[in-house]
Amino acid sequence: MAVPVLLLKGFPLLHDLPDDTLAALAGEAGDLVFAKRGVVLQKGPPTPSLCLLAEGRLQAVDFTLDGREVGLYFINPWEYVGELSVLDGGEQPEFIIALARSRVITLPRESVRRAVFATPAAAERMALRLSARLRGLGAQRTILALANPMQKICAQLQLLVVPPAPGGQPTLQLRIANAPTHQEIAIMVNTSRETVTRVFQVLQAHGAVQRQGNDLLVSDPQLIEQVARGSKELPKA
Image (tube, rainbow, N blue to C red; front, side):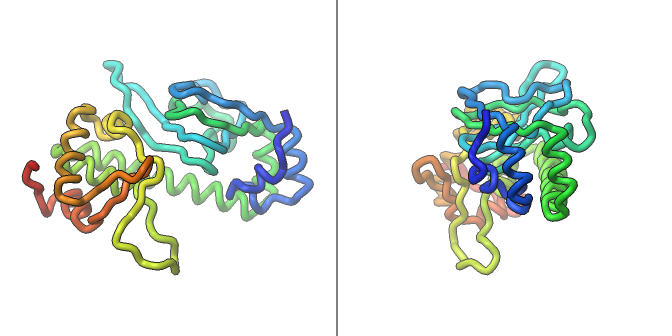
């Protein structure tokens, strides 16, 4: 099913592609909807498509040898996943699941590969995205090595916050849009949902975080940083 060219143009990766290239991709694109916990990509087989998230939220997960689910990273609207197979034709390294009802636009691997490689700005965007993901996975491994659950969760919150835009107005609060559930955070930091809930109760009691609809406001980024770094401990509320 073809999708509107304007929709594709809204994805930063594709923004610099020529109009005729975008039109060709739009004619080949798929438009899929996944229910919560639906599997968008299976681990193992090379993915036939690049998956662009138009609505919802996705998470990359894997499983330990004893069957425990491990969260790796999140995919937010206007981001994409499946780029490793697009680049090298190799296997998909992890499962991608929907955390909420999600709309995913699929672009055939070979077509999007040719289009991106023929447009230097798009190729640079994909390279920078891969670089950011590698850095994020490295930071995630560092978090897993921490022993203190409070420290782990504060470090995870630091990875999730959206920093102020360059040149924008400074703010005393940082926002996590469509914040993950306690269970989703739990599998990211290798702890229980109950532990995450208790930690959030302490953080809220000390004014460090607060809910605002589906978002989470980090009201005291400095305190979160100090706890994550291990230079400050919070007494239980």
